[in-house]
Image 1 (cartoon, helix red, strand yellow):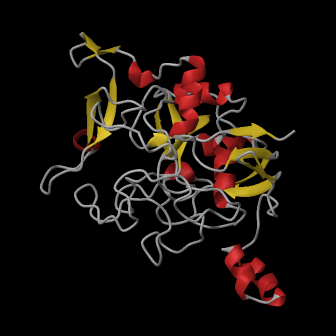
Image 2 (cartoon, helix red, strand yellow; image 1 turned 180 degrees about the vertical axis):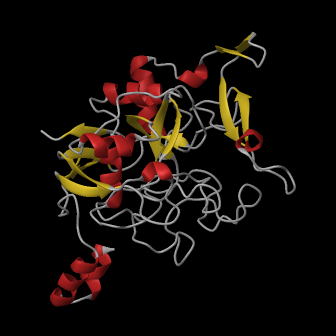
Image 3 (cartoon, one colour; image 1 turned 90 degrees about the vertical axis):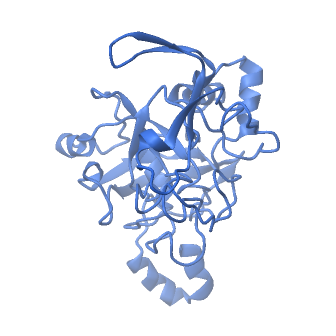
Length: 328
């Protein structure tokens, strides 16, 4: 938004615009190096911004962060393949596992993962009907054993668990972003913005990101040109130059999810480089960004303040990650 303002208004008008759209995280020209952008140290207001915000996005609170580097895009299939080839790493979805059924009996399950299934009109809509466990689904075969990532080197890697993402980051000499770092980077230096581009609804005007267009989960109009994930850098970046900070795929963060975490931060005064290191009873990790399945009628996960969570061992067709590292 600010880049657009600079192109079309005078210096005086731009100064007035800054009063309307105050900067945060010390916004300035960010440094780029080896596919990462340097987010400067500073403060920003973290938390919900509009009527769609959920209870766990409040209270809104000012957070101060040290400078950090963040990947310009999600980690791609090509990048993840290099990691696997170098380390012989086996992802969570490629391993057989056991679980207890409703009667407490142990079930031995062959390796696989969850794949999205578009529903026929009239079918009851809930996650149990639109997600299907498919044997053989993994990062190399994200939609099942008959699918492939051949020719999709520049697509975000998906079907990776939190443990897989963490392992890649450590191999690359990086780490997963904290939830606060992710939101600060996503906001792109704007304050009070619902989305990284400002406050215009995702469905208004030009296509802004890869989300579900139409009646979820029954019909996708493909307004954005993609039924599922899109190649990185397919859509306009945010004001920092970061791509896909809304939609495309959910992104793992380092934090454990806590419904009362923001309230706890407010009560403890923990506003400097916060990170929730204490799992609650459900032991779920934070994911941010929304995905190609997000729709205003369902989750609006493409809002910069939107929080979602998933168990660390879960791999999904719409979940990937990007890395950060500390500034020297």
